[in-house]
Length: 249
Image (cartoon, rainbow, N blue to C red; front, side):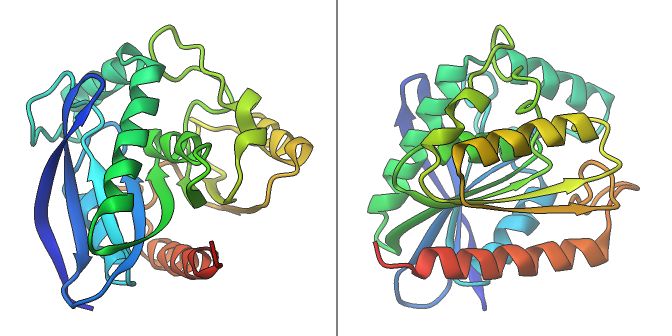
């Protein structure tokens, strides 16, 4: 499906204007919406590829710039030491309330966007996987797709490194798909087991997938990229969302 992929919109949040990058099918009609949260580098070429893949499967996808309070609009951090250091610093500098407010603002905008049906999902990778998980506490979110979500097991997201994500798992009203790499040092076996135990205790509707892969195996830049697994995961995500978002509200 041919898509529009160069639309941006600046929306107000509690901490200033936030730019979002919008990807949607280039045909008339209304489509389910996805808020796609990026890794610590913001809207890189790899994140744009993910967004394009999901838009091409019949979704309106908006990608917020997660560090809009700290970086000028359009800033993309490089996949190098300096970019990684900056991204990790900001991950723990930004307040947890700021992340949550941004997610609400993105969902508010997407739910009223003329090309969106109002059926909403979240999706994310790395930092964004955690943000997609937290954003799914919003009752409007029917489904969340979280790839190798960091900091959930350790409770260290945001300023002060003391988040409450695991304590709020019972607030997940929709279905969650979680995907992990077994060789990911950022989310070790014990961490994954802790997350899964919380999901079970809360009675969450979820699917769980683990692969022999490293962290960031979806990123099509660098030695950790797994092209075959990328295609497999995009297919899995597309089928999962097609089912979850087709359920009557």
